[in-house]
Length: 255
Image (cartoon, rainbow, N blue to C red; front, side, top):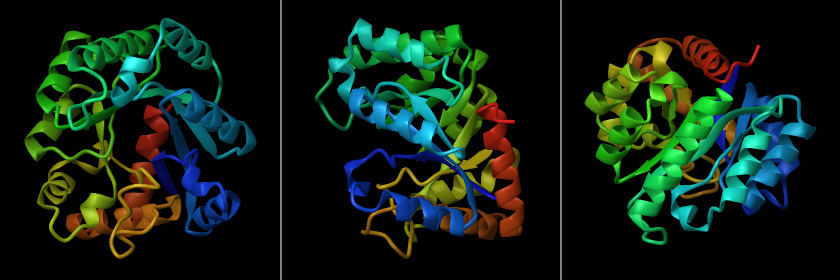
């Protein structure tokens, strides 16, 4: 009973063997997957997967790296898709200061518009943050994102920032990096944040957990993330699986 809250099964890396990847996830006890779309092609594919598989849901939004490409028509389209019963969140959205394709001011504007949209359609938001923590926290506060809450996806910040985000009605989602031997911060976050505020994810095909690091990631590996959190917290894998799945169903409003 594991819930991969952030997967990119809509990526070209799965073009050859998508069905086998999905079957392996089910064999490892993955009961639900949220596939995240972040531009036109990936959103279309996420919707297709959500419609074809009962246990797959979609999250739709616009990635900060590509913020410069987003039009008003795209925003209207996302709002229309938000009414679909299998769309459970808006995102991934946020800020990415690592790549310089989209100027920071455009990223911030697109981020704000998507938060406002999420509040309008009453869906939680999924946050992408790369090297932009202070600005993200500031915008979440200014836009009243607490009203809808959401997920700090693949959280890489400090335990202190994680607690600040929890106080703003956000869940902290941990992925493959928590299993890396040298990853101090994710381990500290796993220890510090109560289980009822934690989620697990793969962000596949990226950030593959140990011992598969360097290979393509997939939803079946979310179990390795859960095992690592269980070890850090000194509790059973079953407890982590049950609680994080319950948290995911709560934030995504899945009955």
